[in-house]
Structure formats: structure tokens, C-alpha cells
Image (cartoon, rainbow, N blue to C red; front, side, top):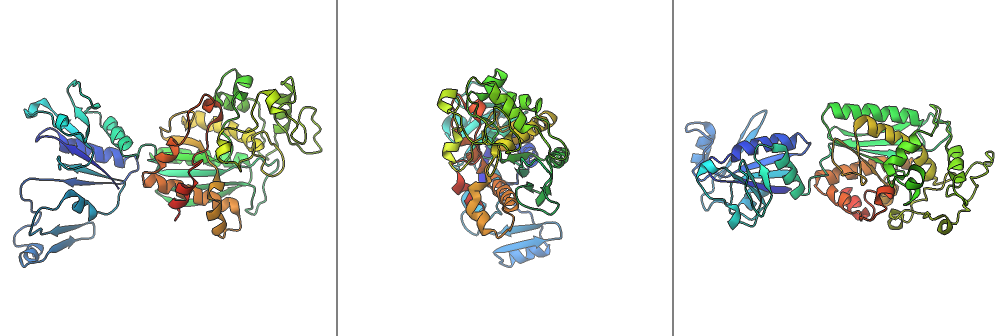
Length: 450
């Protein structure tokens, strides 16, 4: 439970900012509670009322309960309790905003207006992390516009580690590169979509990529209409080894490659597609054996071998992305056929993501900051292999999307999802290769399911 303070002198505007912040932050899907400190005696009760008579008779605590709320009143009969004792009695939430307690040891924003006639508190308190004001001040801490509630909320959520984790809904997609529709009866090696969020958990089965894309369009539109923020994870590579995007598009950009593929991939409603022919054409453009490999025996393509023949050192393209050294079980993106052929999933999935990105204005992490109403990221469900095996689900894919969506959602609610977004190295090839959300962080994901 994160705690952040709003302090300032009387009539500085603390309560008004608190009210706006509660509305702003709860509107982003977080749960918020508040504590208000007062210097005078406070009594919510009225003499003569039953609850007042209980207290007057000596009750330590009195609960006044109704159908819609309850109030707990406690008589100190001793020193005023510390803030930590007050917080310990509160139900868990994402964030507690504290108005007052200006001398306590928690991070704070000072609200300052010249009209109060008082001096700034910030110079004497290192825990004042920013000042919200309507004046152009020059300070060693950030100066925030008091009237820009969204900016103040952004600052608090970033400071507490909740920024980037404020997702109302998490969607996890297990994709498929199949050339025909999956069986009518739900089965493995098909498309499964798991959802966890404020409205609960669901898992759906999709026989074709066209059906899955239509479902995602409807789902994202519904979430947007409800004002809910979505993290959507897809289990195929969102990028290729450094240098590939530039060779095909002239730009060192995975997103440019998405659009390039979207203009060339043909994928029919019954899953019939041209992925092998396109890979053959791409390989033909290299002066030596190209990187793609794997195809059915019945499709003799001159430049697409059945097995890996490429000398990657000669070609100048790595066999694996940097993230796949962190997740060594991940398959090569160049492999297009037989078990673990994520290359086919990528060739047929990236055009779908290009269309979804264009329609919904999605941010694609880590190529773009994880901001906005829809964030797309690459995921690797096998990070939860022990939990999936222990689930008892006869269809592994179904268990994977259900459990990973749940783990990511729980991390977001706990304010820990930001650790996954931060755990990505910065190197020149990142704009082409991307990263897997959770790579190197399997223990954190697994603890979320404990």
C-alpha cells in the first residue's frame, strides 16, 4: 500500500487538490483511500445519539453501521496515535493520500499559494518531493501546476511506482501460425485469449486468426468505451534481430517492419496464407542464403530450405535476439515450420498488430513508452511453466493465458508491474529487437500467483 502526502499551510488549496486527485487517480483504475489530519478536537457523533451514549459509557470503539457504509470511532484516552498506527487499521488499497501530517516521514507534495502569507515548507523538509503552485518558482524540486491535476497525479503515480502499472484490464494472447482452422472442440496449438481485470477473468478460444482479430477489435473498443486502460501481451516476437528491419524498410524500426509486412502478408479467413512464399522472397533478396528456414515438403521454394542452412556470421544477422539470451528456451524467429515455429506466428501476427495499433493508437513497449489507454507488449507464457503444470488444465495454452493475465494484473494492483517495464537494457538494437515483458523476472511473476 503506497502512501503519499499533500501538505501546505491553511487555505493553500490542499483539500481541493486532494478531492481532484482522488477523482483523477480512481478514474485511472486505482483504489484510493485518504487520511485527513486536524489540529482541533473532532467528533462526528452527536450528543444524545445511541452511538454517543455508547462512547460516553466507556466503549473503546463504536461502529456505526448502515446498508451503505460504516464509521468506526475510537477513543484514544491517551496520546494521539502516529500516522503509521492509523494506516495499519486501514483496508489495503493501491494508494493512500494523506492530507496533513506535514512533519511525518513519508514523501509529500507541498501546495503553496502566496495568499497564505507563509513561507515555503520545502526548503526545510527533504521529503517534500515537489511543489504544486500557481507561481513561477525556481526550486531544487519539480514545480507542478496546481491547476493541472493530471500532471500532479502523474507525478505521484511515478513516485510511488504505480505509473505504468495502472491497468484496469490485462489481455494475454497465445497466437497460432496454423494454415487451417483449429478444431471446433477447444484444443492446444490454437489461439487462446485470457483476460483479467476489474470485471473478472475470462478465457476464449478462436479457431482462426480472423476470428481472433475481430474479437480483439471488439474487446479493445469495449474497454476504450468504458474508459479502462489495457495491457495486451502477445506471445510471439515483436521484433527481429538487429539489422533486419533496416534491410527491408530502410529504417531501424520494428514498427516500420510491421507496416511493411502488413502490406505483403495475405491471410484468408480460413487461415490460408502466403507466409512461406513471402519468406522465400525475402531470402531471395540476400546475396547469400537468407535467414528464414522451415517449410512443408510439398512446397518446394528455391530460397526457403527445409532446415537451417544460413551462416549468420556471413549474413550479418544474428540467429537470436538479445532477449533470447535471457530466455534461452525461446525459439528463433527465423524458424517457420514444425514445433516451436514462432517465426510463422510473427509473420502472421505482426500485420494484425499493425492494424490494431493504427485503429486504437496503441503504444508498443519497449519501442514506445508504456503510456496511453492501450499498451502492447511481447510476453512469454513459459515463464510460468511450473504454475501451468500444477494447474491441472488438460490444455496448456488455456492455462497459460489465464495464469499470465492474472499474474500481470495482480502485479499491477500491487504497484510492482513497473519493475517489469523497467527491466530492459538500452542498446542501439532495441528499436528493432524489442524485449519480452518479464524476461529475467520469472520469480516476480510466479510470486504474484502464490
